[in-house]
Length: 76
Image 1 (cartoon, helix red, strand yellow):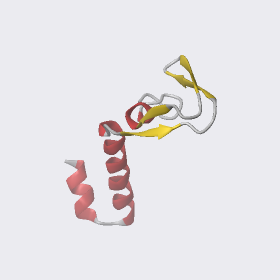
Image 2 (cartoon, one colour; image 1 turned 120 degrees about the horizontal axis):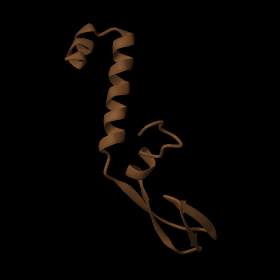
Image 3 (tube, one colour; image 1 turned 90 degrees about the horizontal axis):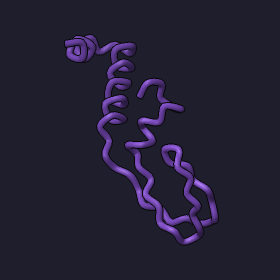
């Protein structure tokens, strides 16, 4: 398996590639997010839907959705 071969090499290039694999795995399997309180009036777009939020509203920011945003990650 390529990951074991890279780990055995131990050089800087292999370490960099392993880190990228780890970050990508985290991006694809992350299932968390945060609840946040809105501090000002705003308009938020979520999957093409528009939501108006006001100060004091609580919103959930999904890391899963963010990590699969095609405007940031090509072919997520």
